[in-house]
Amino acid sequence: MLIDKLVVGALGANCYIIADDKVEESPAIIVDPGGEVDRIIAKIQSHALNVKYIILTHGHGDHIGAVEQLRKMTSAEVLIHHLDEPMLYDPHLNLSDTYSGPEITFHPDKTIGDDSTLSIGNIKITIIHTPGHTKGGICLYIESEKVLITGDTLFYGSIGRTDLPGGNHKDIIQSILVKLMKLPDDVVVYPGHGSSTNIKFERNKNPFLQG
Ligand SMILES: [Zn+2]
Ligand SMILES: [Zn+2]
Image (tube, rainbow, N blue to C red; front, side, top):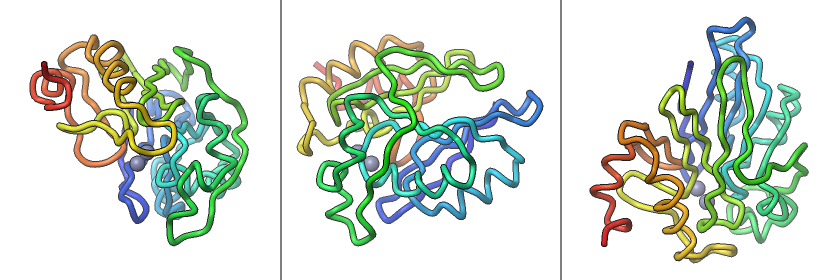
């Protein structure tokens, strides 16, 4: 499996490109294309990937800014959890009204429910609903590769903000403790901002998860 990270946009969101490069035409997903579509496209072309899905971990502007351009250039389907769908229609909810760039609104192609699965090539991706940063925040778990994409739910030594519309501190702690901390120690965590980490480190050292 190929996993590549691009740090995009003014707020430095991590955009992940994941592909089954052992299968013909390398089917791929793009997670959180927050901006800088030209760099994302260059990466897709350099690996000759066939993008099937654009998956949004949640509806904030720093994670969705390049979706429309990328969808046109790849014809991939845009997916988001149904509880975050309203954020895509409202620049106030997706916070793009507070950024210097254009306000963002668009429609997803499909919404996803709790704990569903998707496949690209031979790679199975489990969607884990982790409300707290937003109501419809999700993590993507690829069990066979020990990879967990966490969006703005869990960071290296930290957790996502809960003071924005739809945020709830109790919910984010519950989501992380109940749904993520049960995963194996050596699962690598790829967050929406900053460096990668792993489950064992976060379980033992993340100050928000102790006590
Ligand atoms: Zn966010
Ligand atoms: Zn973010």
